[in-house]
Image (cartoon, rainbow, N blue to C red; front, side, top):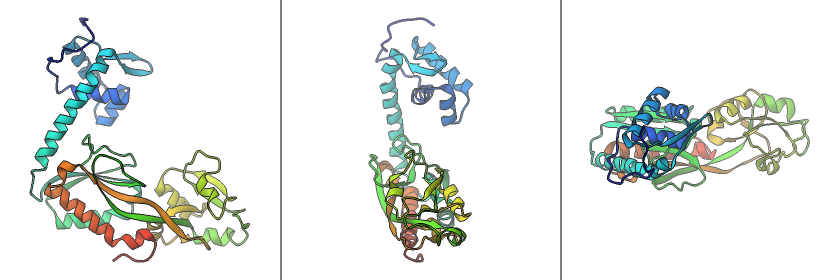
Length: 310
């Protein structure tokens, strides 16, 4: 590889096909993680990076056992590559926004907590109504980046959304303290006034005594498990492993969960629907967004814990 000044010529043409590989490694910090993120192989990434470096005549990354770090040339290329990426995405969004047909493909990202009971019926009804719209559904608790076209429409559970996208708050759900009837029968009557003798199935907090435990009616209950999966926490509570704060909608769909006596419900996070502004007028996207909004409106009593859906 020949060496020259580390600053790139602003008139040099980009190798468009290799730029995504450069950006993937710059963001992930390693070939392996970048390859996993884009669903390709380590060898493919390595080949394209070396081809890009040979085309520019510079090293873009320093390689070590710890991973790959940008060289000065790589640092110079990064903002240009990101600007090129955003231009390509903007062009695609603009063209997709011209699509006025109730057909085509929409990518939908969902948080895992909604997928077990709430979403399947909603998506099935959408498919029956709009059979020519194809959905690709991703279930993840990671906030997928709409501005970088990782998804078209996203349902997100959060207190607030600050992304530079079109957002609509569907509802704010309530949560309460739930346990299985069997657990309450075995332990609740003999529990102390502040929860002595009871057990929490916790939410993975790093604090020894999380604030939500301190603020609960049972601050002296033992935290036996610290888990991060809402579905696993719910199943553990159903199996009698302890009590936990759970969204009311999770308890609604289970006949093995009841609210702990003497406790109420309180507002928790909100459910948002997000999309890129360029897709607002795309028929297939608008139909999906409107369908989701109407379905969640009907389910509001379940999420509030106040009764049956419409």
